[in-house]
Length: 272
Image 1 (cartoon, helix red, strand yellow):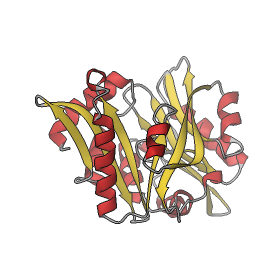
Image 2: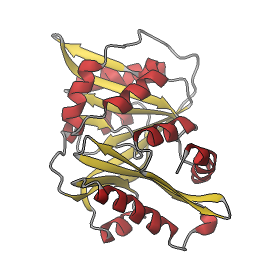
Image 3: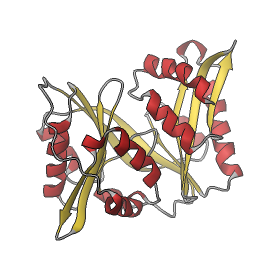
Image 4: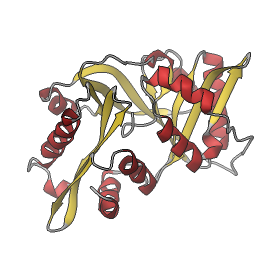
């Protein structure tokens, strides 16, 4: 896949009702220029898959989409195989992805096993003018904590997200130390909040409320980690409704699982 394929990829994404933007595709291609793939038919993009390697510790597969008119031809399986082959050639010890219930049996055939569950929650609300508070630019300490929580360094990716949507880059401190942080993206359909990480429930609530104050969209998505004890109750109390369930899966040796119990919400299924 190249940047010339982004319009075709956006057409597939829009047809699937997904929330990514052209900027998200740019992030994927910048992070892994040799690890994003497109299937073509008569010069038209009919399928995609993308990968990102995080610090050589593990890699991510996302954006596996096939045009509805070309399903049932093995295109999705071929794109998945191509992504796995690319990562295996680079000796990545673990490959991860977020699977829908429909896709989970296919991934199991390739040796993926379940790690934990993720739930997408959606909020539909009337919104007036967004409240924009102080923009937190001192995110470097938060990026150090994120390496521990996520399991690998993804600071370049999060800096890109913060640069595009600085109003959503929040850091909370207690006694000088980072107690929580949050980021967000303005997707094509909705504001997508995450990653959202907190050391306790009060910090988690403070970050969530501030993100919602800064959001300008009627539709908001957030992908909560079920293992976290307070994320789902907090979003439910603010009017979010459960939209769908995903299963975080991995293939290989998962030596760097991070600390998912501190993750209220992930960055997104396409990035991890």
